[in-house]
Length: 611
Image 1 (cartoon, one colour):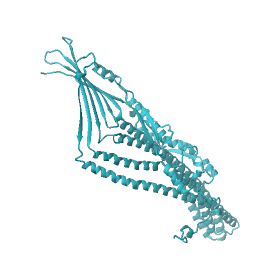
Image 2: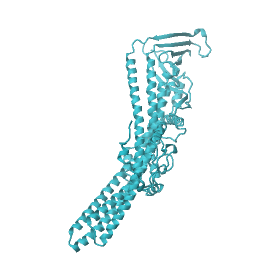
Image 3: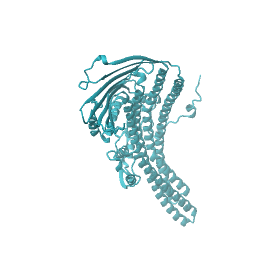
Image 4: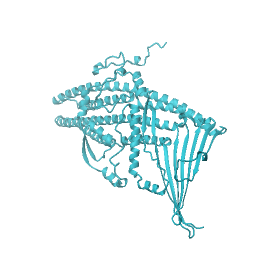
């Protein structure tokens, strides 16, 4: 018979959980953290009216975003406290985050990158600007956020999840009265880390006639299902592997983020001081150009008097060389400054002015110690260098995954039980006769006959584990090599700075002598030019020498895991940890004259008895 029907389906789901776990902080210790949380909605929907009411108060998209942020930020806060003992004020929000997506037009971004202005920066200001506007810095924060969001998704599998759906239908056949019916179901599911799953469902079928006899019929059904693996797929270490790996991934990302913050700050400091050193070189080149102009004028006057054009020709060539050097240095500075703007994340159209006082403060801080012992520094890195801690823990991950995969070779033996009840009494949902319950329990056995796929995956994991041994060994060797090179490079650049100080003094004295000769009319023009060249090279080398020393010091501390960029003006700290100092080492030179060279035969140990 023909019928007319309207079908409306609305469903909703929610969940709750309380999370307690122990987190490996990378130092052989664990900290227990707990996370409680989502609101629980427990009302089953038996009629369409209840479903419609829920739809009317449904959350907006902004609510879901805020809810995700709240949970993610809580996870990051707990994990950072577990790993580092403290948490940062973390947020991925930018100046666009509170705006509607449709409002942010491409034309606005284009216009923003074309804005002009003047920005005067000292080093601390540059670091603040970089952390706020740097694209790389924002991307790293978002990587940490997404790692925590991924953990939230994995945790969902172990929530108690409540869901409900309802279907309404109106039927009319021929000239009979219309008939309204609803089918509603409510379900609760809970997965356990032992591998078990319990599901409870309640269903209602309600039929009411709109006209005629107001009879009603109500059928209710309640079912309960339980499943628990006993061999394959059983146990917290097996079932909880995905959650454990997600937790460890968040630990790794927290460490990576903390290391990135230090590495990023060191990069900004190095770039800033390099620019200041280049500024000094530009000034030196211009001063040298002015000296060459004066030299050329004197040479021209002398050559016209003595009728000896060779001297003036050399002076003109020298002046042109100095002019070219100045032009190249200004172009190099502007190129490096634009690269620095890119690192800061500010438009290239903004004119950035760098304060010089930071370089003066750096020079006033003096030379750092270079007496760190490479072996002690390496031992510190094994405990404190965050990327290396991640490599060590990832080695343990590979080992654990082999153990988990081996579980798949066990027979599948599952205990399953279910019970159901149907009743017609619409007045009381809980007063029922136990004799009406239908229940059964059973054991299901799955023999491990076909395990070719698991065999191949298991062998693949073993190969990856052995590759992981090499990966960890290389990471340790790379760290030791970086530290040893850092100690050598710091000592080298420190000695070069002392030599450059003396080189400037000597070159200036040599040029002063040539100036006196020029005034007496006894100068050799080529010798005079050589003296000028020597001075400008020494001045420019000295301008960058202290910056090189600072760069090597910061790199060494970073490679050891001993640098904390959150400390104010960390780049001015000079003292090494006393536990890292080499014992019995001679006092470090303070002048170029105190630098002692190691003869080649001692350096190569050619005369030592190897027996």
